[in-house]
Image 1 (cartoon, rainbow over the protein chains, first blue to last red):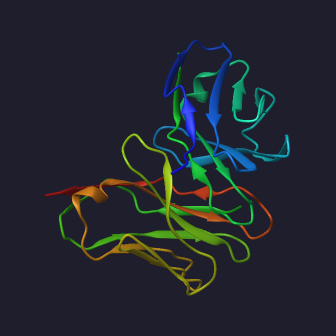
Image 2 (cartoon, each protein chain N blue to C red):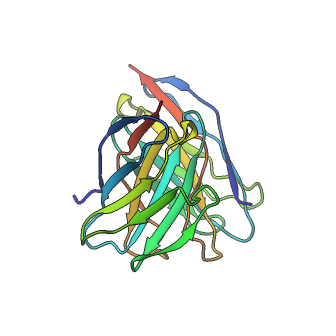
Length: 114
Length: 113
């Protein structure tokens, strides 16, 4: 069964460094999403992406964040200058049609900012 | 804004026990409601969903009924198994064209033999 994959599974970085989290969505999906979960808190929506542009973003998704689909398979989340509070589990998801509502999630990348 | 409040965990039950995980929501209009499950080391998987009032979602022996009058979507299973041990997330999606899912905090369920 097709699945969303994410790399790396864990990443440790120093405050102020740039990180890129990678996701490979399911191949025929058109909508892509990033969510995050700070330890002990709710899973929070960050951004959705369709047709090579952001279609919706939350207030968390400020200028330090960016997303890109650099080729036909990868979907990346970049954090330009990481802060301690960016430490979280980051989930990528994809769906075939936003109206269909079923989003398929990857296993997550655990980011630790020191 | 939209929000989901979920029963705090962790929850520990014996095999074959009855399970209820409570979920209530706040949203304008008529959102769609979901339960996602996360098994150890894996991503969030859709367990079941309901898109309108009084709908019952069901899968793998789990059920949840969309109760508009109580704004609830409680997850139930009559007889749990060790393999049901996971984290369960209640979520909603607004019907106002938003694409995002709004999640609860998740409930960790452990089933002991």
